[in-house]
Amino acid sequence: MHSIVWFWTTGIHDATWVQAIAAVALVALTLVTLIVLGIYAWDTRTLAATSKVSAEAAERSSKLASDQIQAMIGKERARIYVVPFRDSFCNVNVSNITKIGEHAFILSNVGPTPAVNVLTAFNAVATAFQTEATGKSNRFSNREVIPANQESVVNFPIETGLAADQRVPDAFYIHIWGEVTYNDVISSTSRSTKFRFRIPMQQTRGDGSATQNGNWIRCGSEEDHKAT
Image 1: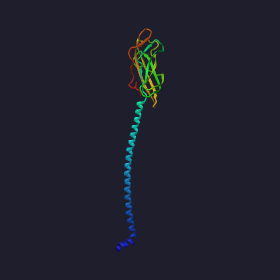
Image 2: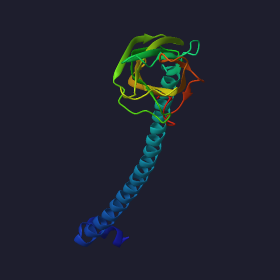
Image 3: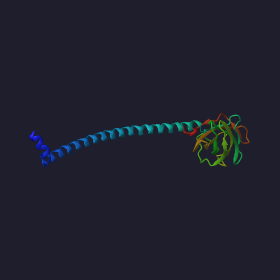
Image 4: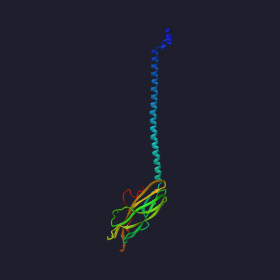
């Protein structure tokens, strides 16, 4: 009983006891701080992992939405293909100096939206050989708009690729090639379709007149004739 009275009256004010209690309190406070920091670190790690998963999910959703939009544009946009007009024969006269004839080609828009700003660069020549003719497509035919699922007919004038002093063979070939560029109403991207055709020709009389001796043959690289 005497010791208890001494502690509460005198010992409690002893510096040793004060330091001991302060040390215990500091240890307890440090322990609590460590626990709080551990909980915070765990929550931060969990939040970071959750944020990463959310960011990846958002990125996947964004890419999926972008792919869906591009697929919709690809499905709905205009597409132009070029084919010879097969309801008429190709007839030329190689005795002419420049233009020996012409042949109609069809620009067919198979897309569900109009093709606008349609421009065709082409070249059309007659040569003695069936190997592909070369040269820049520097002649142009302009068709401003081709409606959805509609066709437009364009006539390509044919020039001679033979030298003026060269005898025109009885059998020769006409080569027509070029590129159609166009836009559509749902995208600002410029599209294009390349084309290249060849047809065998045969002189019918001695005056230079000739007519086709077979069908138009689609030729060129694999990338030609594709609507980009």
